[in-house]
Length: 392
Figure 1 (cartoon, rainbow, N blue to C red):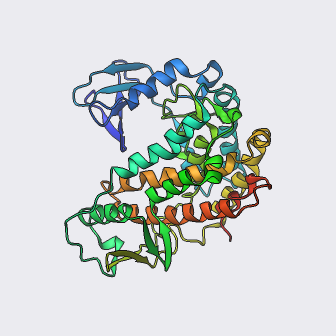
Figure 2 (cartoon, rainbow, N blue to C red):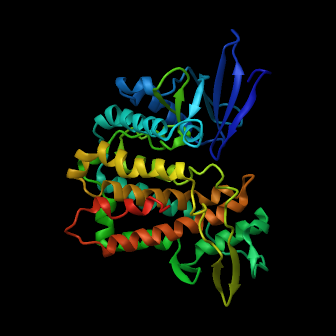
Figure 3 (tube, rainbow, N blue to C red):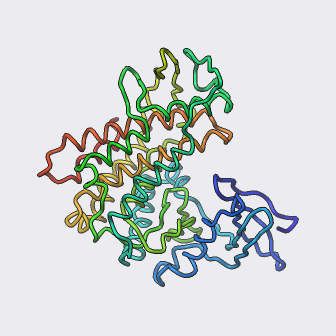
C-alpha cells in the first residue's frame, strides 16, 4: 500500500485500506485477515465471473486482484465510492422515515430483479443442511469446551468481565445443553440445531422450495449496502461468493438481523446480564433486552414498514409457492447471530458478546416454540414476522 494508506475498517475476516494510486485517484484495497483464507478470493471471483450483467451496476467493481500477498493470502482493489451506508441513513433523524424505507425497498428490489431472477443450481436440502445446520454447528463448536480456569462469577455483571473472563464463560455456556435465563430454561446453540434437525416440521420449514433457490448475495445487511452520492441506487459490497446460488431466505435473514439494531443508541441502552454459577449450572438474570424495548418511534416505524409491507409485497409471488420463506428467514437471522456472537469478544466491545448470544438464544427458542405450536394447515408466512415488530 502507498504511504498515504489508512485503515478504514477491520473485520473478523478482512481489512479495508484507503489509498491513492499513481494518478492520485482514491481506491480501496481489501485484504484477507488470515493467510490461507480463500473467502476473499471467492468473493472477487463472484463479482468478476458470476454476477449476471443486470446486477453489475449494483455491485462494487474489482479493479485489481493479487494472490499470495505476504502474510495475507489475497487482496483486491475497488474504486473509492462516495455515499452513505443504509445503516447510517436508517438512523439519521434528518432523513425521513419514508425516504429511509424507500432506500431499503429499492435495495431489496434490486436484488430481486437481478440476482434473484437467476435460478440456483444448488439442491434445497443440501443447502439447508450445509448452511442452516452444519455451518452453524461448526462455527459454534469452535468455541465450545469447558475451561479449567476457576471463574468467580457469582452475581457478576457482564460489563465488568474482561475478555479473558468472558471467553471461558462464553465457552462454558455454549458447551451446555441448556441454561437458565430469567428463570426460564433455554436451549443453547448446538441444542437448538439438534432440535431443528430432530423435528420433522422444523426441518420442513428450513428446507426451501426449489423456486426460492436463486443466485444470492450472502450477506446483504444494511452495513453492506451504500446509497451512492448523487444517486438513489444501492451499491452492494461483500457478497459471500455463492457461485451456485442458495436460498433467498438466507439473504433476507441477514437483512432482518440488521433491522434488529437500528436504534442509534442501543449500545448505551444495553442491559448487561448478571451471571452466576451454582451447582454446575449457569444462571443468568437481569437481562431485559439487548436493545431497550422502548425503541425510538423512528426505528419502530422503519422496522414495521419493512416487515409488514416491504418484504411481503416484494416476495408475494414467492410466498405462494414457498409459504415458509419469511419464517425461514427469521430463523436464519437467529442462527446467523448465534454463530457470530463470539466474534465480539476479541473486539473493543467484548461485553456485547454475551448479551447478543442470550438475546438471540431467547428469540430462537421462542421462534421454534411458535412454529411447533402453529396450525400446520395455516399459512406459515405470518407465524414469526409479527415477533420482529416491537410493540411501542
